[in-house]
Amino acid sequence: MHELRHGMYNLHQQAAKYHDLAARAHRTAAEHNEKGDNENGDWHMERALEHSQRAYKLAREAHSKSGRMETFS
Image (cartoon, helix red, strand yellow):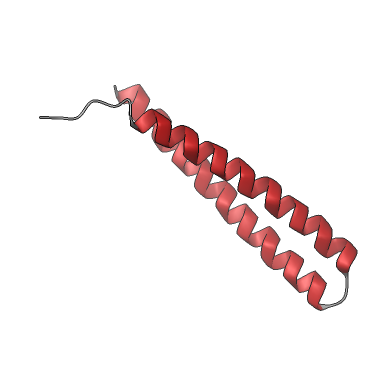
């Protein structure tokens, strides 16, 4: 049980990390696009999408594991 909880915590932490990376890449993409540097803006937007998709998968995995935990009565 403890290992399952620890694993879920790690999944949530990883998901949060990738959400942060996605947000940072998205801001950087916007900065490049505002300067007319669309090539670099597009590159950063692709990284933002990749990070966001990874975060979603990790969060979904953590959620599916949380449904298997026993409740305390």
